[in-house]
Length: 450
Image (cartoon, rainbow, N blue to C red):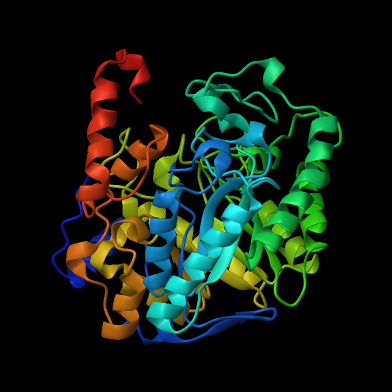
């Protein structure tokens, strides 16, 4: 299918196109429900809007936040979202996705404390209350790139994925290594609490190490083969993190429920047809996470390195998607709704509304009204317009002239390890970095330009 640009002048045109494609996307008549509070555990979010994790590729040496990091999160806090789900922060140096990824350690803990103080102050100053701040603890696994040199740490060999990012048997991590990570993620949760985060997310999505283990059907040993083994690391790391819980600090998970790989194994996929969604195992897992004491979860799909259109539907990307973006949105939100039905007592946050531009707010309100989720996290939109939540809450609608246009340039900057934001809406800050990226890319051989 060729790219179809977003061209809908009215919401009715968009609904008509969705109907033609046979997809079901709910839209509300107004955004009022997004201004209502939602609780999970002892935590109350004052509205249903949040910031999704988007790496800024702007860390200083040693993984500490930079002035770009502070600027980004302070603007988002001032923008009015009730929850800021911070970008992936590595808890082990070998698990970093780049030299510019954030890394939290005992040595830079004070830097994080100062950052969070500034972010909270920005929220209180503009909105009267600070947002809930969640640290996303991650191990990049197959996409580990410390020092900006690929050093993959994989759960198993996956030939389809390895056409994009080469790996060999020497990259397969041992059971002893995985066992040691349980303690490291427990320590990461301790650091998150001491830094002042309100919660920690043990990340299992988007093709990173924890998510990859969930599809390690042929891996031998304690962390592969059976469902119990494939989910062992995630559940053990959550248990280690929950030691740090108290009335002011919680543990959560950003969970990928479908990989979308056209070849080879994938989580949440049918064994007969890897592209067909089969949520039996993901729903079992989310029920077990609820039994383990998690009060909230954020649901996503896909792998941004390999199945970007599944993770975040786009107009223009690095490849031609095989489906219309509205089809991807339909799959995403109905997967989220299946999770909400499975664990109705959990607070479930949905993902990936930004493709819908000026209609994303009515979509977020529609899915909450219909009980498909409890709140919506915006990723690319927050790069483009960090004040989107305040616009919706104060004026009833998002500003159409400030929305994300899903051009993918922020993704280019992340992959180029340059400070990342919206090239279109904030050109004074990020266009110079994008020009550097374009110039560097032009000097590479064609097979290295992806």
